[in-house]
Length: 374
Image 1 (cartoon, rainbow, N blue to C red):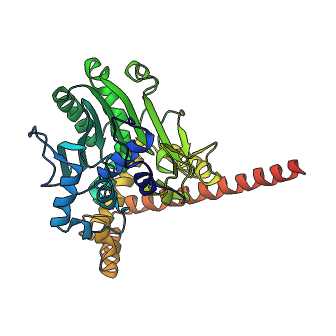
Image 2: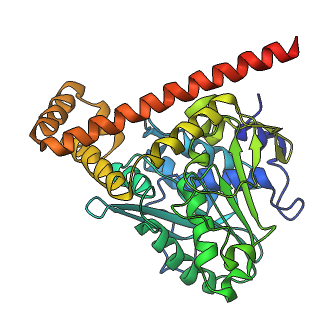
Image 3: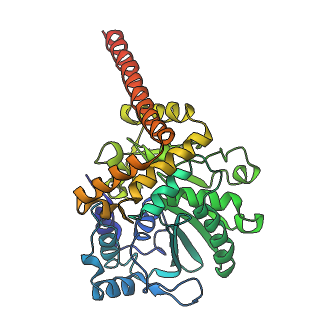
């Protein structure tokens, strides 16, 4: 089925002046923000920018298109293809930041795409290959604010003042979360300049934002897209106003935006979430409800203590020399105190027991539905 690459072929000959930004363009920008722009795109202290075509040429010279991750979609290929189109080749990149801290931990990256005169898309990168970013995602389960969210607010407050005209915020995965969070927590003056916020399968929040006056003031401007089998986009507290998108993959694999199906300037929309998505959402919510905030924190800290005992800094590190990694993790687990080991065991056992219960109940509903049809 057609995807973002097909979209670039179909509509790549139309400039943004001829046909304004649409929901699929939003995902192209969100996907391109994952590209390794370090040393290529100017940072947030430089006023002049580089075009998508220039960025692709520099990435080719630096052989970055040859650097592939086993755990991330081929986002640089998306940039490469976009650079060959009339629509995207002259889009200008500015204000690039890419920060990583393994101690705190946090992972934050953002870039501005100026796609037409005085029209800008501020793209927040989602979680990449770095374990620091993954741990920060887990921290969202018990912290009202994580470092990347604070940095996103600071970034919007700083960058939007430099830009003239209208501003759109967006991102995929955690990037979508950051786009919504920063729009809600920025000043009224800046919020009035934001014409749209795109959340592409981003996780929810520790506490709901929908009751906040600043969120309500954005009514009609927040656009949330989730794939039919969404897992990530259904996590934590979130607004139930979302658009369901068809994907060529199922389950967690549908989180990959390059699998989302498009038709012309829009996604192919679905009417309801898959059974898998509903089951997983119910399982995770029920599981989290069994844990206090303190237990959630203890579980995350213990889990990542085990993972990081291997010396791994990225997901790719975990896939290399697997036996050595597993050995280090087992040693770390055995060195933990009994209380922590019991917490880990009981938390994991509870998760799987709830998962089994949800599946049994779902099976019963399916049988009832089948009987009803007869």
